[in-house]
Image 1 (cartoon, one colour):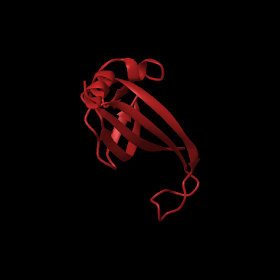
Image 2: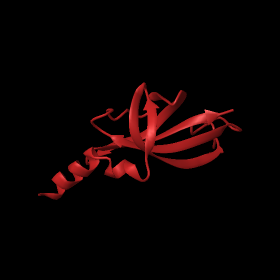
Image 3: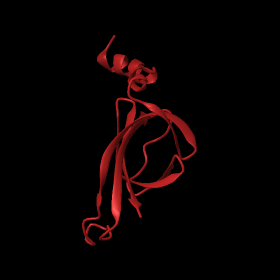
Length: 105
């Protein structure tokens, strides 16, 4: 069995999400995901498109590519009822890795 086949088998099973993952609704689709909280901070400047004094929350979420396609940068997504904006997204070995942010009041 090739390494590619082993990775595909592990991604399709619950092995990847069993210890670290959870369930989450993204754009109305219930998914097994792994979520990494990247933190919260102040908006940096007007040049970066963020407003001064507004806190930004950042998360990285992983899910299976067969369950939900990779989104595009600047695409808005609804995650557990909250609107988030995609900053980066990539697909590799059957998993989608998406970094998202949202403004907090």
